[in-house]
Length: 107
Length: 183
Image: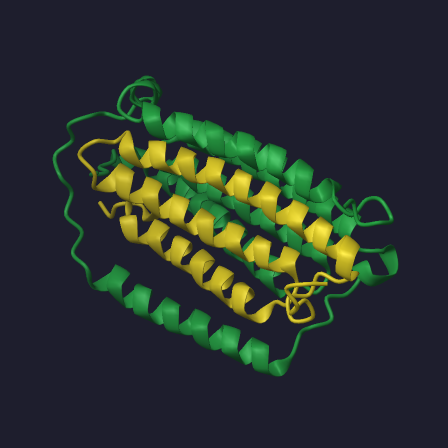
């Protein structure tokens, strides 16, 4: 009998690849800080999905991928908090959160 | 991991396949909305949708705890805080649009995205993945033991990073609240 789609490693890898490519597109094409942060979150998610997929299908020790995905989530949360507070602070000072308009180091 | 099924269960497998494709669609369509929408709030909603889809895929991979954490941390915390930042960083009149969309940037983004997709897609489909024999089963109990023994240092380091991030974000966001810029 034909194995199910969800029994193939490639299915998960392709979804993760799609998320990564979308995130990369957003990171390059979007001008705002917050939009870029959203794209970075997509990329980190693709990485997490890859970790867990490889972990479930291939790795001999099946705790490693789960542990690292938890660490990725923790780091992503910290990164989002810092990024957003910087966006708020920059907006208060420059009245803009578009990366192109904020080109001076000193204001 | 080998999946072999009783032929009598075939219907359920097809249903499970359908749900899998639904979650994959949710993840990718949400991602598309997240990077394609000009309205920031819509982009955040797209991100949340995408994260829920990925959480569903985590369930399929047998890592229920990761799926729960995905919903709690990403959908519950990160998306909400992004929503707060959208509300704080923009006046309502400006919030409707993200004005800096230009054809050049979109072309550059498409170029980079498609290039990466083709490169990695080729790698994914051409590699003959080989599973190693299972040594550790990977139950939640074992993950927890690993966090407190083998990865204890990394665990503590993440705690420290989170603490610094919380304090740092409060300090950074507080500056500039007063008219003199908080100096």
